Amino acid sequence: MARSIRATSLLLIALGVAAPALPASAAAANAGGATPGGEPPTQTQGQAAPAGGSVGGAAPGAVPAPTQHATSARTGGALAGAKPPRRRHRAVRRRTVRAPTTTRSPANSTPPQATPTTVPGVFPVQGPYSFGGPDARFGAGRVGHIHQGQDVVAASGQAIVAPVAGTVMWEANQPSAAGIYLVEHGADGRDYVFMHIKDHTLQVRVGDALAPGEQLAQVGATGDASGPHLHFEIWVGGWRVNAASQPIDPLADLQAWDPTA
Image (cartoon, rainbow, N blue to C red; front, side, top):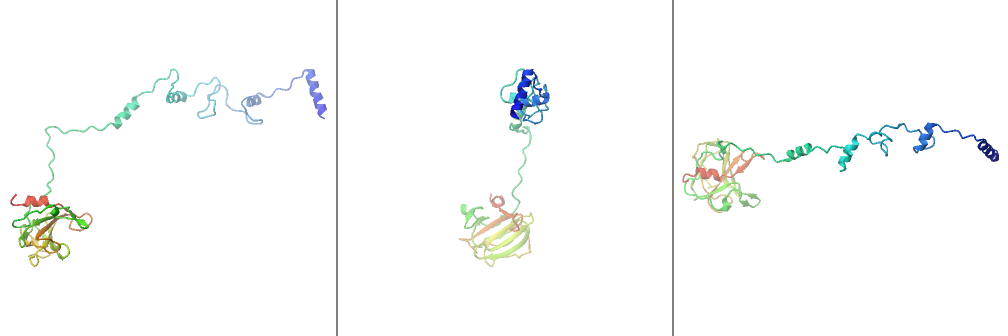
């Protein structure tokens, strides 16, 4: 059988008969590297390769893709005839990060007035006194806490008076710390605390209305005290009402109320 096929081929060559030509589509597929029996490519000559298409880019004779100029510019080598990139966007970026200019007030403008931190009142101790040393100041360190008031050092028995109008809201005795103490709710909304009061000298009770300068008790050394003095506190937001309640340094008020200042 093989000899018959070979003989037939030799006969055809001898007679000058050419082998049949392949179809044009099949030839094109083989030229492009298609596998036998595969679909021929649909791209025709003269069309650009789709963006992101196969490696090799546009077909011969095609116009370069529009994105080539931007790509070349980004890589540092603009194509011949390409315009340099505009600097307008870079200038805008520099302006956006520039620190804002401070606006100054006119020279003849009046500066805002500071809000007063004190209220009119009467000094709470009648007679000679002192503010003691650094340990007597608001914020001074204590074991497990800080000093929440200002100490007014005075002789035992000197009068303690209400600094502002208000109402007696609390009265108690704490032998290990504050001793006998009193709390006044002031008409100004703040609460005033008087500690280390001398025993058996209270002249007011809870609920009593108070006038500025009205006597409350006498200076003593009850509780945890090394000597006679008045521990004086001012609270805003209520006396130990909630987390918003807090004591403030009463020294400014005391100095403003000092009759000898």
